[in-house]
Image 1 (cartoon, rainbow, N blue to C red):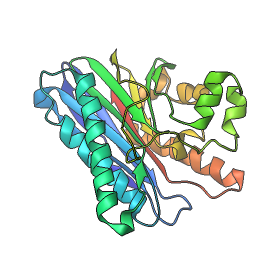
Image 2: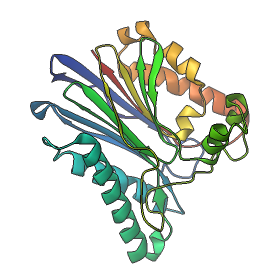
Image 3: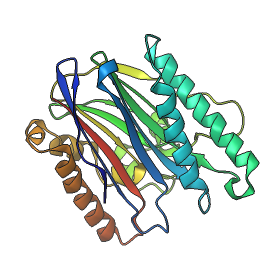
Length: 264
């Protein structure tokens, strides 16, 4: 079911169209959360998504805390460095999840992934923790993809496996870093800011979404002609493909959530 339909907002002469979709899949509950903060007067558009980890209720609460905290922190963004503000937002989200986990036995050991994109002053800034992903796609090419904090990504970096082996690897769902983990929090990959242009797509998604697509499929679907289709309809099409592939796999499908932003 749609969480929201597209919005058109002026951003320095560009129009930002935005849509969100989420599906529970075959899981007992949906522990994915996605939301946005849109302030065209301040030329500030923030998009966040989180995938909760934990037992009954705990994972969903962790994801909710992550998204709420990150967006609230970034909604106050002014003239300061965006990358520093993003790092601070993730730190605050990490601390809030740890505090909530320590204060409520029902929330013990809850964690969450997190991914965000901030569009401001002609730039798109990305950051992530865990294996929820952010993409910047331009004219059918991936300009940027966030780096997973996962066992499979580590094996890829070491050359132990190739991308084809990664898709079906038994450890593909094991992550190495999440919001709310014990010890000192530090982002493994710093925020990345890039120029954003008319026709660009920004895609934020949970692993339940991206594991159904290889990169070349996403770039083909979100190619130059795709911008003729509203982001909401485009997400509906992508979700149909993801659901079909999950069904064909014979395995229970995960929560599936994605935000799609088209800059015109």
